[in-house]
Amino acid sequence: MPTKRLSVVVTRRLPAPVEARLTELFDARLAEADGAMPREALADAMREADILVTCLSDKIDAALLAGSGDRLKLIANYGAGVDHIDVATARQRGVLVSNTPGALTEDTADMTLALILAVIRRMPEGMARMQADEWEGWAPEALLGGRLSGKVLGILGMGRIGQAVARRARAFGMRIHYHNRRRLHEGLEEPLEATFHDSLDRMLTMSDVVSVNCPHTPSTFHLLGARRLKLLRPESIVVNTSRGEVIDENALTRMLRAGELAGAGLDVYEHGRDVNPRLRALPNVVLLPHMGSATREARLEMGERMLVNMQTFADGHRPPDLVVPSML
Image (cartoon, rainbow, N blue to C red; front, side, top):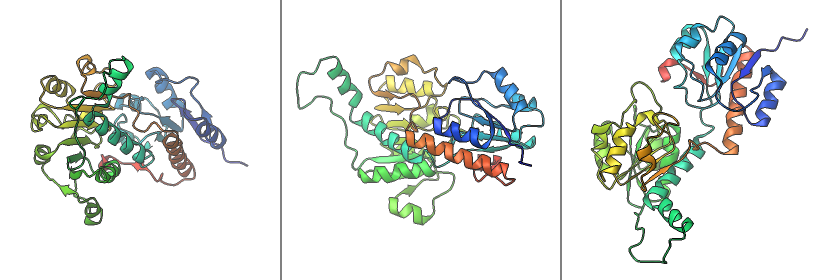
């Protein structure tokens, strides 16, 4: 007799090839429309599924997990970040959590460099003039930005994405400094000519550009708060393609408005879609709608990694991208 296929509920629409493979391998219930699944429907799905496929928009907290019953055994997250899932509570209840690290590294690093260039070279301001037909021709003092070569890039979080950002920045002639929980092995550090700082404060005082590439955890919430942001020079810029909660958005906005920072490039926000309207109005800020990993290639690779985790679990083995609380 054929083995009964595991029941899977998918909370959001995924790329068509990923959905097709899900229905081939599992008894999968796909989302009918895109958009975050309502909490009540999410609670029902957690009681009905062996595997729940989640995305960043799904808040899986202790209360939802407490009502999930005994059937749910794996939360397969479509994405690398898992700060929207209470991993510790899930583990206590015997529910495994997997993610898709690595699939979005290169694309997010590309976007980080794009934001650095856009802010330093004042590209949005130039585009706005062109679109408003306000360009009066070339002028020696018009829209003067800065040169990347020779600038110090301070990377907060030197994991996969941080290292990918460093490789790109070196190609532009930037000098790499970084703060991380642990210093990189010299075999990784030397090719980047990277300088490690065990003190974040010290790194910030030396940085022309700060790139946030660390996850959101209780220990990184507002890691760049008002006190630390004030360690930066007025000529410095801040770029964030990781998690918005790492930066105190109100403090950042105040300093940008006061001219205490030169600019910012943000792809993520402290309160999700609720972006500070004063931040939106600033000409020296580039705001993107969380599109750092938004490439066709990344979305398909994320699906492939997710499916490998799910199939490995279905075969009775540990998912290769298992997330455990000690990793967070």
